[in-house]
Amino acid sequence: MSGLARLDGGVLLREATADDVPAVVALLTDDPLGAGRESADLAPYRAAFAAVDADPAHLLVVAEDGGTVVGTLQLSFLPGLSRGGALRAQVEGVRVAAARRGTGLGAAMLRWVAEESRRRGCALVQLTTDTRRPDAHRFYERLGYVPSHIGMKLEL
Image (cartoon, rainbow, N blue to C red; front, side):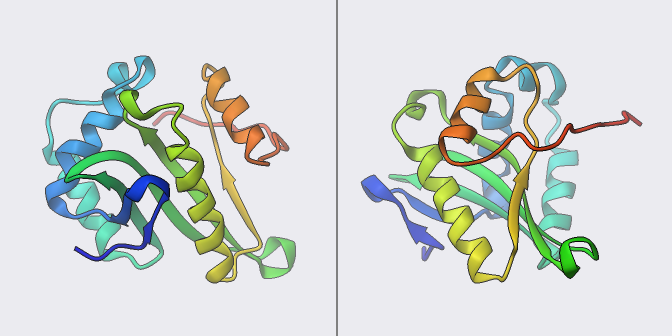
């Protein structure tokens, strides 16, 4: 299967397929926050995957090593009027398998995000990270992300 990029260590970064949904959900649930908010019912995830997959402004990516999904992220491209009509890249759902954390895989995935976002003409890459994830905050800051805004959410 061809991919978007070959990362350090031979990991293949590729677009996710419907067959990857269970592995992606497993990565989303493999932390204390995700374990409490994700569901065992794959039906809503399959429907969400179909919507993401059908929209060229959204890209669900998996990192695969030896046939095993070891990382994932969603990259969305958002046109807007602010910043002179700049296109933004929004990164969501960044996850790396527990056994692969600290190996540089997450950093390689986010370097690819920056490269792909530049290639598509984005002016910036943005993401949100839960306030209860201080390790993630340090990780993103090491990669050059700046905590420039306060994110707000309204649960519906």
